[in-house]
Image (cartoon, rainbow, N blue to C red; front, side, top):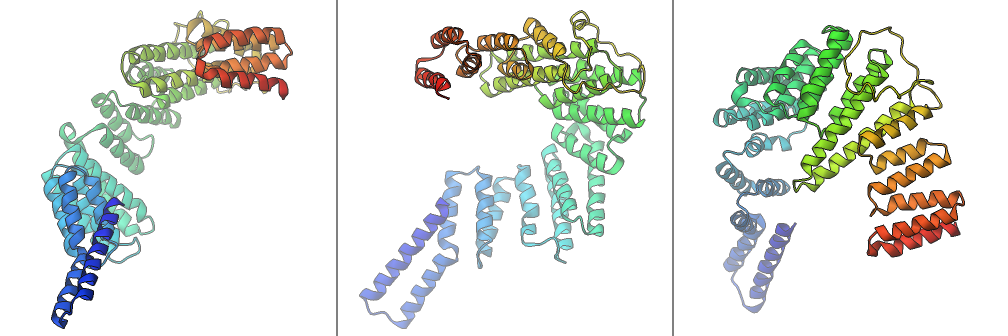
Length: 473
């Protein structure tokens, strides 16, 4: 936007100077024609070229600027020469940049619609450009750009079977080329992209996909996305019979989760959710016990808490916040699972079984039916277990309070919630609202006094106003 404004101002200035000269002197027709050509030069890109060259000197490594400049030039006629100058500069200055090379291979497609008869030639031209680029820059990043290009255009050409077949053939050939040279061409991102293509061509639970992902997780063992993809495919395969089902398969999947995937990617919410989705499905089929499910939740709390301890010595505040949110999410999920247990199902034995996580043979194909009204006894056991064996979070206590129906138990939970972070005003205000609602004003006054000693001075006015408002509503 700043560059456009600069060009506009320079053009206006130049035209104004020419008008001044024309008004202040008598000019011949020849000079007037020359001045008109000069004005046309400004309008046909001379000023824009000056701006571009100055910008390149100021920000020589900014590829996004040059791509944006190409986009702007495409909106105007008679800018072919300047456009080519910018493209040449990208090719010269970003020869080792995969994104830049991909942009050069595909920039001409911006002027071709998906319904245009010229699309076939344009895609073939782009594919030829990628082939040349891969010959010069045979890197995982360049192959990733090529795979992404082919996959995108295969979807764009969904209504044209011949083009889809052509692009699918190129994708299959590209995946094979990457597979033949995995040591030099493969990255975690590219492994995921190739997995998508293998799933599309062979199926979500195919052995081709499973074998690919097994190799990829060995190469990139810290990739939560690859582990998630592999384990999701393995679970799907165990359900449809692609691999053996039963206790042996359950033990294998559990071993991959607890022994490899989660230790490598303990901060991945998606991976934890996949594990507990699968665990709860096994529980519904009576393939694991209450104690085994409980043991996995308690282990999860310990592992994420340990990760928080490690993260605390770093300067990554965002990472720390994500781990806090993950711990709260898992604790809430634990309480919700307890709430959904069948009537009469107890968690009291779970603590004793905390180190017994072996899988058992399915007792039957019959699924457990959750209790419609909620298992409040199990919830109470769950929040006592968390209070004793984990680090409860405010979100955990909020969920327990929502499920709890006994006022005394709610009071105890509010009290515990305020101790998690005494400087946080929200748990105090929730506690006070609870006490005021019960007309326990003496205790509310005591809690307010404690809270005022814990929160910061700058929060005091708003906190006092919120408390007073409870009596006027």
